[in-house]
Length: 182
Image 1 (spheres, rainbow, N blue to C red):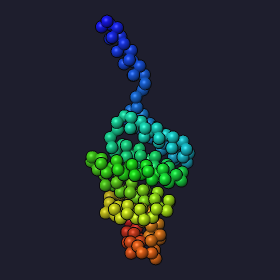
Image 2 (image 1 turned 90 degrees about the horizontal axis):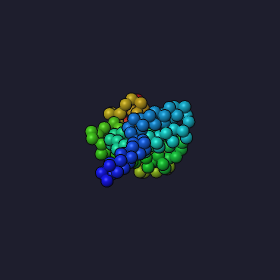
Image 3 (image 1 turned 30 degrees about the vertical axis):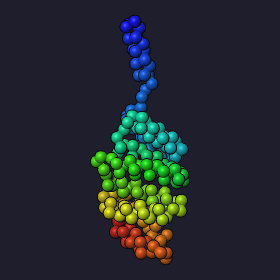
Image 4 (image 1 turned 90 degrees about the vertical axis):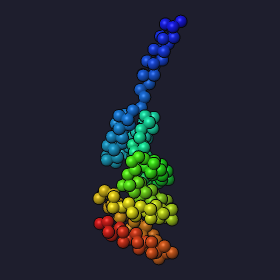
């Protein structure tokens, strides 16, 4: 009886090993494929690879910073495809994940807020996006030069939208901050 049980356990173990569980290495390879396809402008292919990279990271029990990056990358590909509602949801997930990461990266939190504001603007959700831009202002100096340049573009877009309305003063502040980032 013991031999039968041991044989059964060995067989189950071998089958489980053949299932090829997701690993961080697999997720990284899929993310590399996503990035390569994105650089070639093959956004459909990039989306599929990014979805797989995120799923593999989740299955592998990846850390919060890796999950946040995978969510953010998939959101970026969705935004490039004009799928702004899907991008919004992914940016929200990435922001929530990043805000709970240890250690927390203010630069990454800031970038996710700017991207979320951009996705909201693309859907005409200016008021909601304004709140994220107000929250990101103190974090902007911590962003990379490329991220600061992009942030300045988003701030200017919001400044134009707010001109002449009840939030014109906030629009002027966004414009001034955008100018200081250049």
